[in-house]
Image 1 (tube, rainbow over the protein chains, first blue to last red):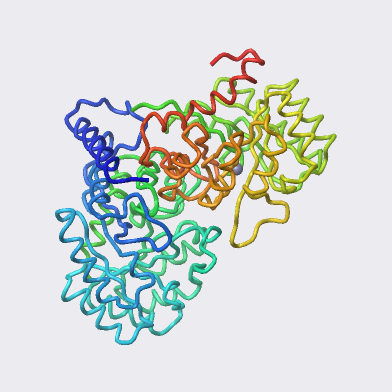
Image 2 (cartoon, rainbow over the protein chains, first blue to last red):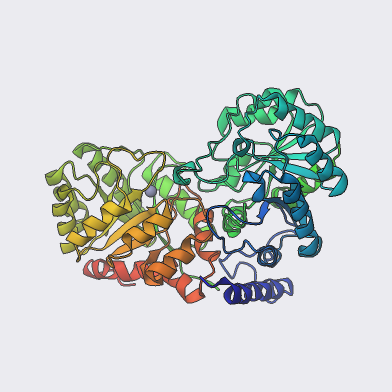
Length: 300
Length: 263
Ligand SMILES: [Zn+2]
């Protein structure tokens, strides 16, 4: 694949389509492709994007500029960005510095950095400090299964406590890809979630968001966790026909947010899920932006 | 662009409803929201890895019931098992030669490189029915009878005149695409796995857009995540249209015209 010229032309085409729709040129529902601008209320916050390189393949949108163009073309007004480097790198300080810098350089305010903190590394508390004080990040994104850190590990509980004290929103990523197709040398199981409700209860003020949770966590265990505190989910790995409407039958609306897992996933997947389910204006607005905006604004 | 969309892979399982007809109606409700014109549907209200002839017939009856209610929207594929050759051949005749069905679905009863499949594939080719074979490469371990795309490549080499559809492109698509690449009678159905970016681009690059088919695996999967593999891919609109419907129409045209159905 030679992505550069064709990505540029695709993005331009998408941009023109959105621009046309915004100008009222395109009629409602005339296209069945993913278009944010046709029916949706304004504002779309993608709570689950990544920058830098996925370790196992090049992705069509793993250049920040190309990702930003795709997000903008689809109506995204804010994207919470973690770094793929946070999975395996040990020099987390530079991972977070690069992430913050990349978010500043691209996107013109679109990208909001969520730093990595690995509580199994020596002096990890300073990574947390830099995320909050130096990079002014509003939150952190954790991949405990890539750190070899179980959720009943005292260091994990301490990290949640210190993050909460600093007013940071915590994103906990349960899995990055389908475990059936992982690289044989990089088989990373989702964490055992049984201890999590207890950790949440013991961390007053914690704002916790579970990313890529929906194929790992369902039914009563999901509800128990949501009831344990201020815990939210996003829809990147939600599946099943009419999945979002189905989820809302079980889970309170204010706990569900938009997330794409781009660029590892095609961005359009999450956006089309909002079209597949019959959702009213209030539900759409809550999932697309209001819930995420409220969560980020809240400081414990 | 307003694409014509045909879905090569849907099920009655995982869809709300107590009868095949109500489930089909529900599936079509969601399909309508996504602009999907037609659905290929197979396997009944409940599933069995290793179906008995009775189970197989019941599954196919349920699908025919569902399809009969929506003849302009849904095509049935007959669920067969190479473990029961004669019963499967009879079922093929009942549902395809004498019934409304247009394709065959084989799942996980037996690896598809087994010679036991030969009479079924040969008969399907005679009837001009396309054959969808489930295929997955799982690092976590395949089921005992679960085929891989490599198994399918062996089957395709023995049956160059059959039209074979590799469901899920093997799940592990980076290996699946390579495994089926030498056999021009295997088509890559991109349904069922996560919407991992780059999948469709690689399939088009390595197989050509004419060998790639859109399918969803709804109700277990959402239409949305699977359509995103096409809409989100960095490929020309002409390739998207081939994948979304034109390739499938081309593959089904011979059997449909035999049944007097014009496209
Ligand atoms: Zn299936």
